[in-house]
Length: 125
Image (cartoon, rainbow, N blue to C red; front, top):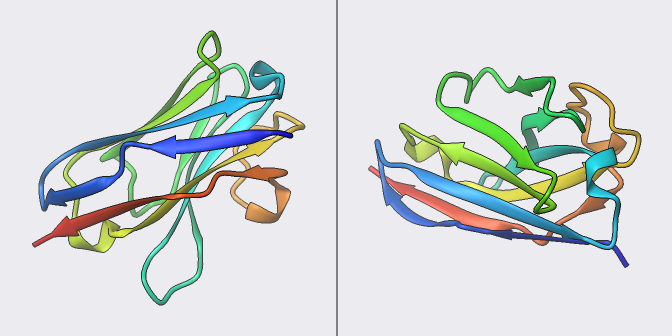
């Protein structure tokens, strides 16, 4: 079945950077729009960023705009989330997700068909 495997999480000090990766398998990756979501401790999962199948369009949550960058490499079946200027409030489990319709700017998590298992990001103050 389809697999999405996140990596790159960890513990970082405020102001630091991390790069998350999500490797996809058993799907035609280049046809899928991809998204990143996160679930802070004790809170519901929320949208972070999304990228269209062709990388032609990206969208970000206001809380990460200007600090996070989503990108993808269709040759490697991988989507990335570069996170700079991290804040303690960025602490969460980060999930990648795949939308088989390849839609642009999908922020509704119900629209995504496949999910990874998540990777923990902890930002210390």
